[in-house]
Image (cartoon, rainbow, N blue to C red; front, side, top):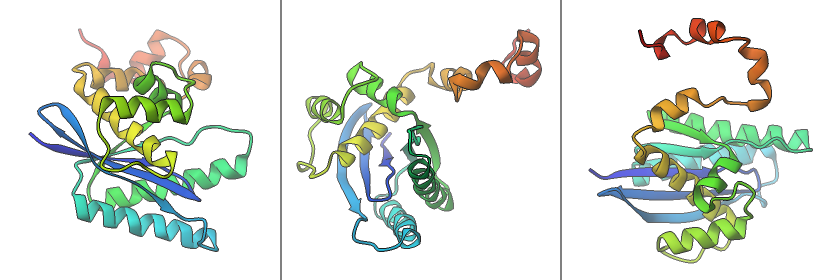
Length: 196
């Protein structure tokens, strides 16, 4: 059964996107490109362009799932907030077309592709080149970052234990202790994960 994963590396200046076709459990790159947004004067128009372009990509390629990189927590709060808006708009466009989506932390993506959660963009692109052929050489590493997100989704969904791992994986390790004080608390908040 063939499936197509749309991978997005959100950005408000350059947004990377890729389409990965899975056939017989083998990934094949269908598209690899970026939306170049720097020339668009206002932030609101950039957000609108992200929404419209995501819809156009979905309507052209008919993906089955969206895989998107989660905003990372950097020093610049304003940049992080803008990045979160770009991500949210892309997710909203996908949901308006009834697409499911998965969100992946940058370190998890790098770990999945290269085996090193601190790998640079160049290392990620190089490893992806060794794993599969690209239709053309991308001009920006944001495109290969988007491919890395789609590839991470493929790897995770190929693993028969992926669903249970996703349920058990804490969303933010820094706040895990404050949300869960004991096993009793975990059991009371997750009764569907407990077997008798």
